[in-house]
Length: 254
Image 1 (tube, rainbow, N blue to C red):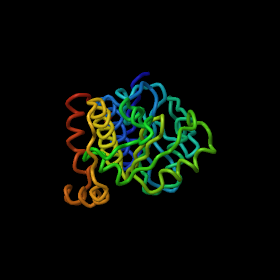
Image 2 (cartoon, rainbow, N blue to C red):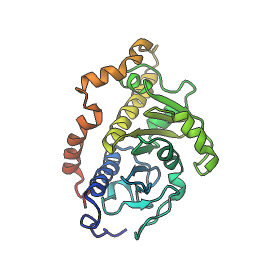
Image 3 (cartoon, one colour):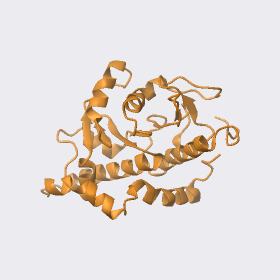
Image 4 (cartoon, rainbow, N blue to C red):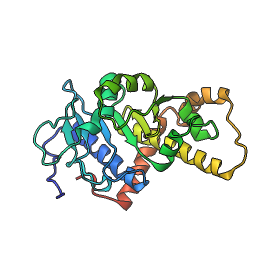
């Protein structure tokens, strides 16, 4: 795919900022090794009553995504406006279900990471054996596997299983996070994936696992709020993540 012309002067400042953050999230996903070739998506809802969204151009690797190459679509996954890039409407099935039912889910992020998928295949799911898992378990739902996400009838069940949570484990499939901004959804995925990585490695050690008491899990939201001075993990970490990306894979804000 060729490099697209910049859209910076052709869209609103608010849309350009969302495009820049979303492109950064795609490239950071690749940088952390969470991408799955051209599979999975990160979507963001644009401001306004139109219910328009941004998503990756189908066929472009996550490490190649730029702010201008992101495609604007409607709630059905159809392209809005002129774009030379194709989209995968079926890939937006999960995302559209969440966006349509969660006003706070400005960004929806879905991955097929090795660690996340491995834990999603375990009957007990995520275990309370680390600080990261305790943070996730304070706001986690589970959704049973129904095959490739093509069936519109699956949407109500997915929304039900996510409920008001930040994290959703898609059994036998992968991980999903939501956030009020791109930074929140991305950092939530970092915590989710870290919790799964710790679990897989701890289980590989073969010893008896020590579980975090439920009372501590129940208090994790309050503790995270205190430890981040009320700013949240996304706002605290996002500027540094962008600096890392600028050093290792610049060009996303084009």
